[in-house]
Image (cartoon, rainbow, N blue to C red; front, top):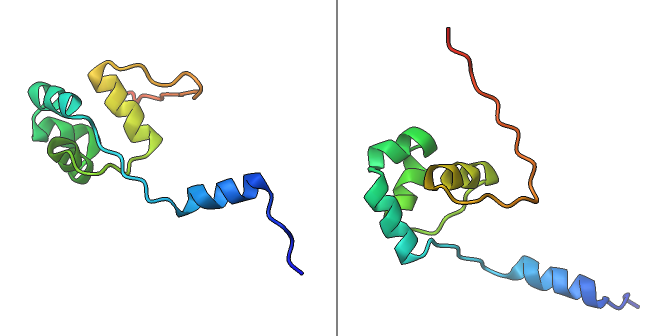
Length: 91
């Protein structure tokens, strides 16, 4: 006899099985393309993420990358995260 799954367990399993695709909207993509060149984006994000941003490909990015994107685009970053930014001091 197996245990009967409760509603929350079923919901979690359903979410786990979903294929999620996240893309930037066309207006946001055009704003990024107007503001930044591929070279400039590569300096901040690296080649792979910069190319995805420029092309509008599916994004699978970390929260750190999302934070950087919010910073360069002057978008608010969700306030439910605590962000600690350390800067390097170059002498």
